Image (tube, rainbow, N blue to C red):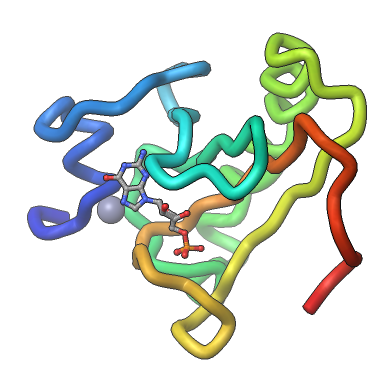
Length: 112
Ligand code: 5GP
Ligand code: ZN
């Protein structure tokens, strides 16, 4: 999608600090980290939000969750939080499906 920041990162039209990449998935450091380690994990296909997942396109989510343990281990994370914000009122600001991988310190709270 031409005006999507994360599609531009996938296409190297915007810079990012990548930590993992394969044919379907890209992971990179968040530009505004909320924890000492804050990684954004995205599918290379543009899906605007978790609410747009369905039987046809949701296999990518399993693929993402299959690589999260490897990314976490490579970054030295034993304990971490995985977050998805779906929709503006839930805090989503970039409308390309992504999961936040947060860690590197003891995390506050549990949910909202
Ligand atoms: P959301 O608020 O949609 O759940 O998460 C979007 C995340 O993307 C935010 O944590 C924000 O800091 C991050 N972000 C926004 N623009 C960029 C960018 O250009 N590069 C990187 N690396 N992260 C970005
Ligand atoms: Zn996109």
